[in-house]
Length: 72
Image (cartoon, rainbow, N blue to C red):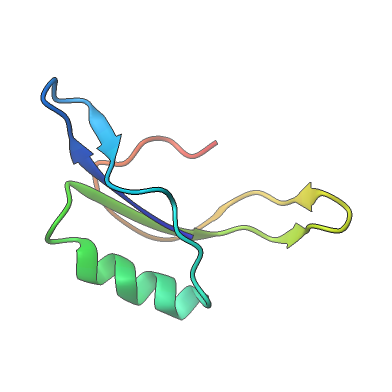
């Protein structure tokens, strides 16, 4: 997954776009690094999942730059 953030008029972080699924961890990191100069914060992460069972593991940070909100 990949997300980027900018600052709103009030100085608060706002998503630049909805989080995007990436085809691979490598692609997520490459895209995040490319976006780092255009946003105040960028984050790429993965999360082990078994959608059939509805089970999702803890997020694993792949890349982080700048200001990003805490991950839940």
